[in-house]
Image (cartoon, rainbow, N blue to C red; front, side, top):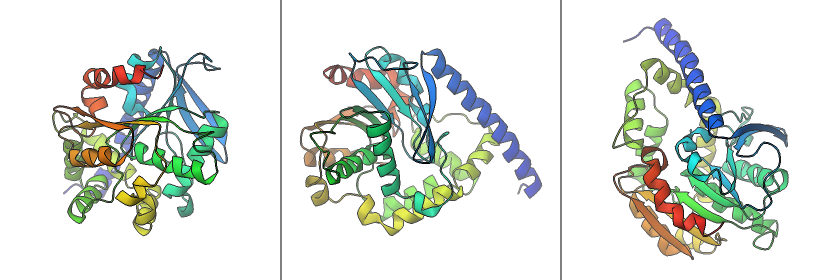
Length: 314
């Protein structure tokens, strides 16, 4: 058993190392021809990358990348070189993730608040009406909720709609056993739990992360805001997650491509097969020998699997 004092030392060292790692990832994205922006909108400073310095190219379509729970815009770093020349690319840090901070006020840490604020940021600040979305995990769930919000504002589909490329979105309320397993995975309480989460996220090749950074992540992934988000979600599961009937009668993207790692242990492939049957104008793309993060595990294979479909919307 490591003493509390030593744990604190590991945490502080891990914090320094993690910030240095994040800085290196940021520089890697900048080297690929992207620019970091920050925008103060509705009381929140949102950070996002684009492949243009000031104004988007009016001749190109807009491609918006949204990451998943506990992640950041950096998750897409390995595929950015493939998409930078064909689109106006926007890679957002979602509220409460990455550099986009949200005050620890419980009412702000709700899916409905996150969705409404993000929709208005995209629609009003970025001035995007018909973007292409490329999302991972929770990001795909958010897009479907944004379409519902656009419908309530009477903006769907005439003034807002999208094409969606969604990597393994967690749309449904999982059965009890899988729900309890994922709750334990995403809120680790020990270093062993961190390793278990990484093994589930990257079943083919788990990344080697220094012990000090794991101590930092142990605290970072359990901060007050994330706990609020989980508590609010558990209190409003019927509102956050979709039933089959609710999904069928909800607004859909103009075209949806569900992308799934064959060996996804977080959101198993059977949910992708189910979604494809329920969502009109959708199809399922399966990436072999990958887990929940095919864009990170096999970036070239991932891009090649969606390249032809993505280029249909140039």
